[in-house]
Length: 239
Image (cartoon, rainbow, N blue to C red; front, side):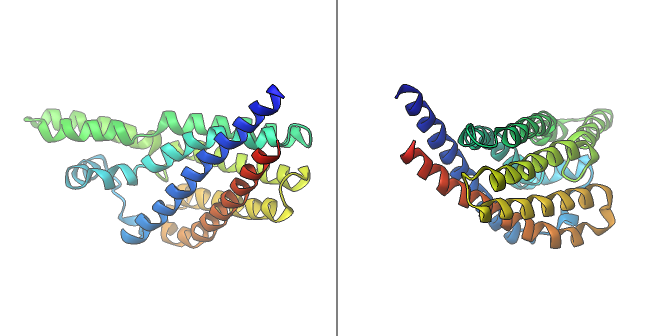
């Protein structure tokens, strides 16, 4: 009985964190719509980012994936709950998915540049000499190369996280715990997001075209999360 109660807690905690991510994703869609959804309008240089931080620090954080930073962390207990739900069926797929997602999340979190760039923007604005500005701008460029949205430095974290989602969806398809429609929705959404990540990283000339792939991929990923979150709440009541 004690073990069953512990699994209930795992399911409910994973479902709650997933619900927060769902709300955050909807917020992300709204913000993207309000700001025009134009990827090419995102600042490309450190100085441009500093200027944006001084004008609108929230938008500056958003453009440097701060929202994704928090949702990536929140999805860690969710993936554990999804893996736990398959502990008696098809554990290999879901365990592999969880490990790959954790690796991707770790890379993404450690490489995220939002907060360091915010700090540098304050120092840049307060600097009084040209040499200080040059040094701070150089540090900013190094940070952007490591983890700015669409940069090769950010690719591994995003791609591995999406790969974890793809494998988890295959696990759902074969595990018999979640519906097959949930699995197929996750597979298609994850695949489209992986294509988007590849395009926006390695084919920057068509960043706006990549939006055509990201939009349906993001909506399908959102639908996938809603579907498995509902199931996690139900599993909690049955455990």
